Length: 603
Image 1 (cartoon, rainbow, N blue to C red):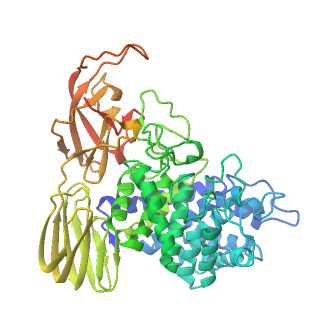
Image 2 (cartoon, rainbow, N blue to C red; image 1 turned 60 degrees about the horizontal axis):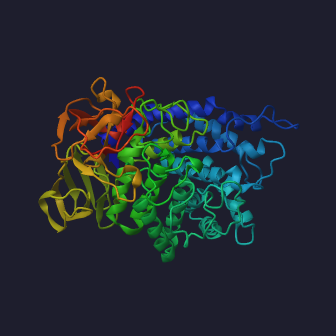
């Protein structure tokens, strides 16, 4: 599978390789994450000198960066980081304990005992990222050293927490999906059984809840009973991905049924229109159903990435187009917005509204993207996702090829190869040229009412039906042209989403748009705008390569009140007519700090 580097997604991959991965490498060095390994490797009889640097889960930032390098090596064949990989592999081999244990925080901090505080220390979480890095490096370049290190830790998990071991689970789910991946890579069934035990043991309140509570750790209910998305959003989504991975291997239908119910909760009642998850800054958690305040949205970048990863697994499990559609929503909106145009600055949280006068000095809610964070989970998570992005675009089986993300590229299956040419998401013309014979399936977005189809050299089996897959039996040389209507549309939220009642979001194709202060007339504030829902929406083309299509909206500007609270006046309120520009949400905050909003009140 190969993305066209001139496309939106392919361009992000190229930027990731040129800027984001090197930035992550530099920062795991700068912040002491690699130095933590060197410190232990150089320790004498009296123990290591100095102190551990960074948060206790800093190892995971290194491992995610290594995973990004592994996927990038598989994609492009690069050997740019061969020296780093050789050094780090040697350090891991030196530092790893004879029994397979490896964690620079616990090993490098006096009086810390392995697995004595699992709700806090993230030891299995870090081990999971080590396993996933090793799998990526093995698949990408055939590297055996990291895989051997990961297997030794995996064997420790099997011995210590297997059938006859201690019922230990980690406070931060992640190792579940990693153990399944390690099983897939090695064929060692004990890793799969270890993943099953991690899943089955969760939800029995074995972790000390403390001030966060069992929900925060996803330890409040067994996975088959926990059908409402709740607690720390990233932990919830990582656990769901792991459970779905387990279903894909063992076929336990009760797990899939539970995940379908959980998905309906997360995506049907608790997801932001940009594909973000987590509405509360407190505990980085999900709120109540429909609790989706735009200005206080946490919508952590890692949560959107985890949501995409879970949707991918649900897509593989069911073949249903809705999961691919939510992958696209998150990817083109929340995830895309989390990185700036240089590839070296990032949002941790992703609000849908930034007020005039917002104090953006805090890491929790900055006005602009930052180059790194004290908790730096998001930048290397982005790097590993983008390096592997081509793998999410399409799948293949003996019957043919399925295209899930509408992006230019070349996608090869067992029986046919498809070359996709399109300007999507900026235009709706999608041309697929097929080599070989077999069934081609192309996802039709749910919003694409009125999509048209032109096929030569093939027989249409189904579609185009919005929200499903177009299916065509293709002969060699067949062409399939799908034309999607890209008319801008207004989107409302459920009435129970009180925070945005009386407002609409503007979308064009899969892209959510927003209004930034930088595009408003002088003297007009974002808070004064009211959108006229009856007015036509015009398209502005040729602005720049990043936002080649912008939207021109109409409405009124209303004067600001003179007091915080005043007597209600039932007379219709008027305002000054105004036209203003909306840009794709993913492009905001690239022109300096300033107010922004997605949800626009109606005139």
